[in-house]
Amino acid sequence: MTINGLVIMEKIEYQIGKAKLCLVQGDITEMETDAIVNAANPSLMGGGGVDGAIHRKGGPKILEECKRIRATEWPNGLPTGKAVITTGGNLKAKYVIHTVGPIWRGGKSGEPELLAEAYRNSLALAVSKGLKTIAFPSISTGAYGYPIQEACKVALKTIKEFLERENNLEEVVLVLYSRHDFEVYKEAAKEILK
Image 1: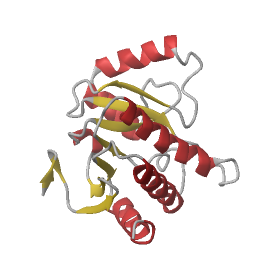
Image 2 (image 1 turned 90 degrees about the horizontal axis):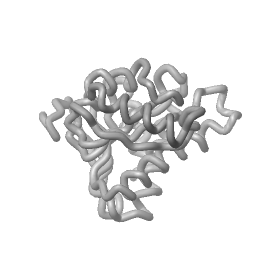
Image 3 (image 1 turned 90 degrees about the vertical axis):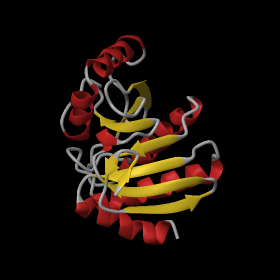
Image 4 (image 1 turned 60 degrees about the horizontal axis):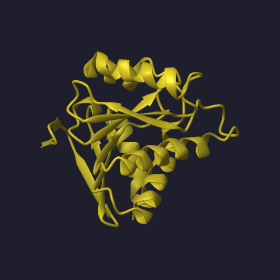
């Protein structure tokens, strides 16, 4: 199956308000949404995982804009939970929204609140720019060590609450790279999005 140019194994769709919330297994760098979200590090200079893949595929324009943002807006790095936007460069998406998720420290250092803020601020930035479609990876569940079983609940609840209040987005997609991650989100969604 191909959706927005992305070859996927399975797609699950939920209607929340006027918007669709979709779970797909695939590669976020192939999404043709208005924006994709980058699980960035505070430096905004690229890194591993999703961050590195977006910078590699998107090309130098993304890094140029990230450097400008660091020089003008966030000289000490982008704080956890905040979000900024750049061009999509060579990506199929027009824009990249960069957000920094929390590093997992056992769950008692405000990680759920910071993770929710990363999703909320990314969604609000998309709306403020007039965007209609946005795709997210599973923020903080890679190198930052956030347990996916916990992170997916925060992601799904935060997006659901945002879409219940805000009616300017048409589609939010959670793009899970591995089959395991997709199944974890799928199970959590049965409870949270019912």
